Image 1: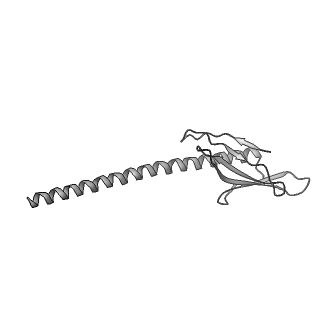
Image 2: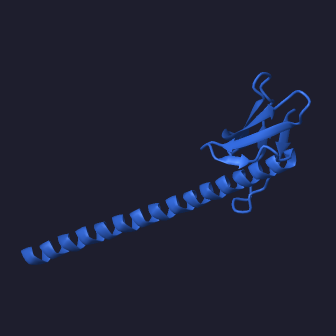
Image 3: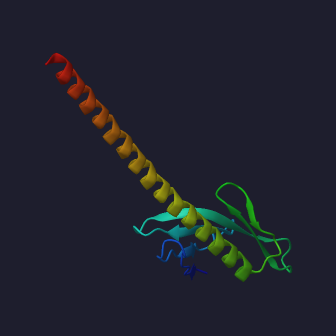
Length: 132
């Protein structure tokens, strides 16, 4: 049971597939990962398959990487897929805004460096004027 679901981030514009691994034969645990633009894979959560008794329905309990419950045990498989797609989109948006913030911080640092250089030049010019 290998599942792939394609999602598209509205913010970054690239597709980030969400991949559910094959369930572990003994525990029934599946890892959920998303593929990044550079081709690397990042785990975003896991899904545990539980069956209370042999005749009962399988139940899925899902968590993100921080131990927060994503869906209840009675959630259907499409609901679980949808919640992980939304989680991947939220992570994607967070990464996008981190990149933008880093860019603006670098620009501010460059502006500060330029201003410091201007101040040094002004200081040197004043020293030249005073020594004439």
